[in-house]
Image (cartoon, rainbow, N blue to C red):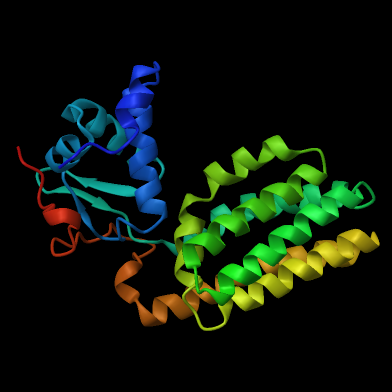
Length: 252
C-alpha cells in the first residue's frame, strides 16, 4: 500500500510519528471509514502508512485508552463497537461546555458573529440539498466551534472535540436518517435567532434540545444496525469478517 499522502511531509517537519499515526487512525475510526467491529492489522497499517509497527502499536494502545479499539491478546485488535454509555458521557461533556459558552455569548454576539453563523447555515442547507453527509458534518462542526467562539471561549472547542469521538460516530450514522440534516439546520437556525434576540433562557433550551437529539437517534440506529453496537456490561465480541482492506487476526 502507498503511504498516506502528507504523512512523510509532516514527519520531515519534525512532527512525532506516533502522534501522526494516532491522528490518522483516530480520524478513520471517528469518520466510520473503519467500521465498528472491524479488524485492524498492525502489519497492514504499518505498510500502508510507511512506518514501522512500533508507532502503530503505540497508537492502538492510545486508541484503546480512548475506548475506540479493543485489543484481545492472541486474537487481534478490533474497532470498538459503539457503547451507549460512552455516547452519554461524551454528550454530558459537550452539553456542559457548549451551553455554558452560549450563556456567555448571549448579549455579546456582534453583527459579524451572526453573519458568520448564518453563512454556515446557508452552506449547511446547500450540503443538505446535495445529500453531502460528510460535508454537512464538517459544516456542523464549524458551526458549533464558531458558536463557542462568540462567547470568547473558542479554545474550549478543542476540549469538546477531543471528548466526543464516540459521540461523533453516532452523529455520522444519524445523518443518514431521513430528513435528519434538514432538521438539524432548523435547530441551528433557532439557536442563532434566539442568540441574536438576546433571549438567554430560550437559546439555552434550544441548544440543549438540539444536542440531546442524538439519544433518540441512537435508539433508531441501534434498531437498524445492532451489529454496530456493543453490550454495556460485557467485552465486545470481535467480528473477524469485517476487516478493512483484508485485515485479520494480527500476525504474531
